[in-house]
Amino acid sequence: MLLTETVNKIGMLDDVAMAQAKERMDSLIKPPGSLGQLEQIALKLAGILGQPRPRIGKRAVIVMAGDHGVTDEGVSAAPRDVTWQMLPAFINGVAGIGVLARHAGASITVVDVGVAADVDIPGVLKRRVKAGTGNIAAGPAMTRDEAVAALEVGIEVARAEIERGATLLALGDMGIGNTTPSSAILAVLGGYSVNDVTGRGTMINDEVLDKKRRAITRALEINRPDPADGVDVLAKVGGLEIAGLAGVVLGCAANRVPVVVDGFITGAAALIAAAIKPESKNYMLASHLSGEPGHGLMLELLGLTPLLHMGMRLGEGTGAALAMHIIDAACRVLDEMVTFQEAGVMDMDEEKLLQEHR
Image (cartoon, rainbow, N blue to C red):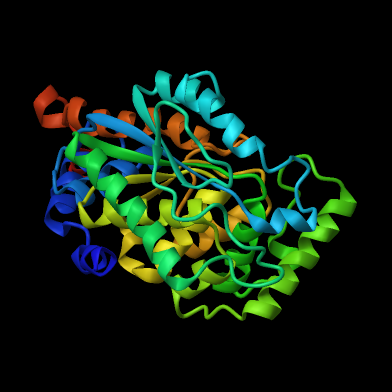
């Protein structure tokens, strides 16, 4: 099985490359640690790529699209048809992700893994497992076999991008109602109350927020997902695009390629990937802190620090595309700055020793 093979390939970071990168980073013409997170990003990338001076080349955003039966519970202000109606804007580069990916120098791959409508849009990769999930407030989102199939779609798409030369992948999502299953996933895997993890999503009022919380509560009571089994959680209360994105994470980790997590929905996918294979967290970078209240809890569970705090909550991969500039900058600092020795400048430790011996 592709999922099993992929999971078995995921290992730890390259400690030797990281040590070599740290030695160089600490000798650059700056006080140690003075570039903050830029330094940590560069060291992590060295460990992922196995390169003491990592470089980012071709980059790609993978947007997974899927619909959700739980919208029948009135949990979203937007109708389900908006999911497929947005896809041409992604392909044509005029949606938020199109603009930001273009300026990050990233390609976009849009995948129909579970859209309810019959999508026949040029440029959209048709890999639909089923026409949307079931209503999680009344039963499981999908069968376990369907969840595995959607995970494997993500693995295959990630592998194809990597074979085309991608060295940095980012996660993007499209699916009306998908903050509801994402909140359910967080509640299960984090052990949080429904109220703590459920936000307003897109433009919903107090009445709709109450419907959303009640739908998630029923979903957890009816389906009883097992927090020790990531695939079970995914199948019972997840989403098809969430499954596809979790597969992308696993595919990246198996091939030692860094993957940039976007916001709340992609964070839920990252949680599923980590539940399936904890070591996959080593290959994730958190782009930003979403305006969705549960996102910070997700990042804590994953042990990730967001690069940006901009109040963004659009999804689509927009925060991840924006963070690509910072990730590239981190690599350039490590590679292009010179050391004290290379510059012929006395470093901080040498100056301190001279002062002590005067």
